[in-house]
Length: 93
Image (cartoon, rainbow, N blue to C red; front, top):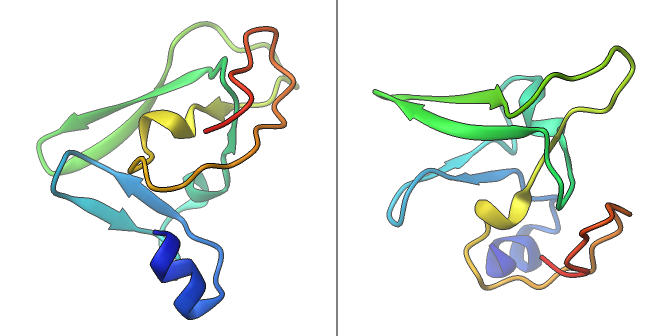
């Protein structure tokens, strides 16, 4: 991902499905690619056949931001400063 970002200058919208497969949502995909990160995420990803689904981990109040923990999707090659402000923030992902 780091190499791709350096080479293209684009924001990366990759989603790691497993140790081999990555979905590249940079140019196409649905609104899920714009979900922000939080160390205390409200969503989890589940693979169902060839589909990747995001499901809630708990009830989400109206007006509450829907978030996903990017660390679970990271390849381990990137190291970003986290600004999620969650109580249990890990400070990096």
